[in-house]
Image (cartoon, rainbow, N blue to C red; front, side, top):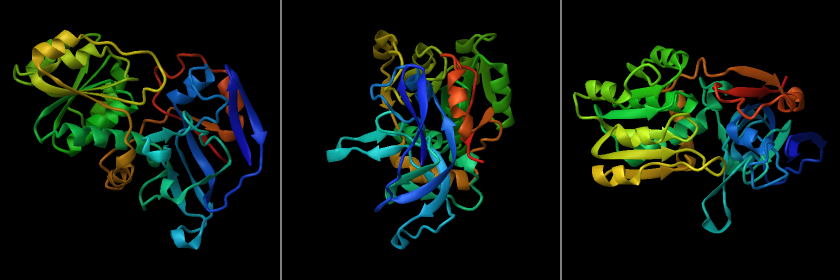
Length: 325
């Protein structure tokens, strides 16, 4: 099989090895998203090196035990999470263990999910975002008609805001990029606030009738100040800090404000348990991901793609896909 591996800073190489698929599902990879964890690994911010990038993958079943019920040629999505030994949480592909940037992969049956009719490969590649969003709503216990501030109109923020609509909550999406906010409006998000040109606190007060938001969700890669989540939430409200935080810089906020307002603050690092629910939500068309793919790179060109990267390459991007042809 062909696999691409990052050996050290700025050094990615193609390797050809034998793939052992005994007792595993063998999958021909058709699409792998390029994510922030891959960019960080390329610039030496990953603890595990060398490593094959690629946190998520979709593909076609090549070989599987008949007892799994999977058929050759069936479209599947592979979870980004692997159960850690001895019940120590989950490992993340492309971060803790080798990821999926290969032409073929072999995975345990429990990590492989069939794609229902109507769920495209592109949609499936956002299942992790949907899973994390769904876990956030479950933990916060958000009721219908409650206000939820979502900080950042990146892919994760746009999916969070759409899911708020789906659950009949009232999202207030904040970003400094008007183009992203326009896309949010196309998705049916009514309250979109541009933090570059509007007084965010005053606008949230107006929207909520002077009460501020019941909840705020801050995503680590959303590009906004985490203190906004605290300042825009009402007294005794709840704030969720979400996202994969095994890489990247520390986040800081004013603990005094949390104490003064008696806020509940929770951290949500992954959506592992919600991955099957995320696929169902995509099948039910709760989430629209049209417009979230910026670039499509042939899988065989991925070395050239990596070699042209800059550290801030993803700052204004939604999603980039490596595709097999």
